[in-house]
Length: 352
Image 1 (cartoon, rainbow, N blue to C red):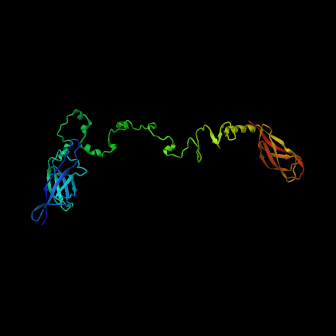
Image 2: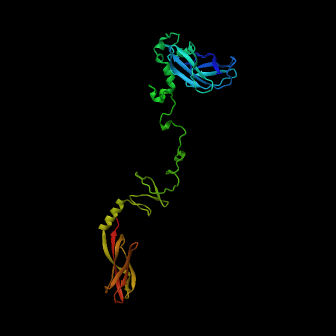
Image 3: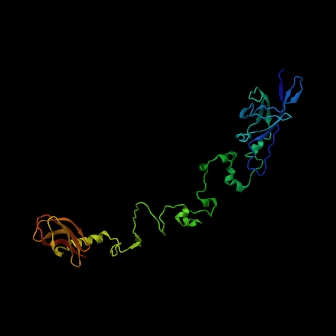
């Protein structure tokens, strides 16, 4: 015999709207007892059984579906189920004010979605209308002139529902500054407003900068575009008077060097100086170094020539400057043997 299942207890709704709530919840409770008819005709609860349950809200008469949901609750030891219609997401916007609504219940006792026919269709008379009362259906006629003149009078149930779904970019007339939020002690964007700021580059965690004090090794080439002021150390000696060098380690500007070279080029003379040795024996094939010095107040800027009296058979092997003169290495390439006077040719310039 086919088992017959009945819906013994219809619907039990419960909604509480507190004065402090901005809007009522968009769901309501539903309780029912599921029973079955035994072959003997006895009706007993369907205990501890997972069933398929479909809830449909119909609008108007004969009724068009405006909401439906399917769940799989488990009956308790008394055959009861207790669910929340609308779930956690809540019901959609339903026009409770202008239409009648009915609740239609479908049951599949096997716990599937094989719904053959509705078990009941019951008109909703009052309880869900608290949802409507929470928006525009208030029985209180608002007559406060301050409220009616404010922007709040235009807030609708849709505005409240969609608030959590509105992006920041969609909000109009929002503040553009921190002061617009009423915050007066925020950072104003200036360094002086900050406290506890680092006082050295190391305070920022930077350890590869040029320090202002102490010794430091700096690798690689560095280009300075400004003017170097103060003292610059050269091998632990102070370089000063760059424009007018005086110490051995002092640098000199190009202008300083050029002016002295120009002066020396325009103020020089070729001097033939006899070697201090006087008459020197220079046998065939032998060499000898001769030297000569510039007169007091003059500096050697060139030289290297030389000759021996009474013989033209010599050649210059090498020449090199001295502190105050010039030296020449001469070689006798002829057959002459004897004593001769050596003369050195050098260029001496007057110092500026």
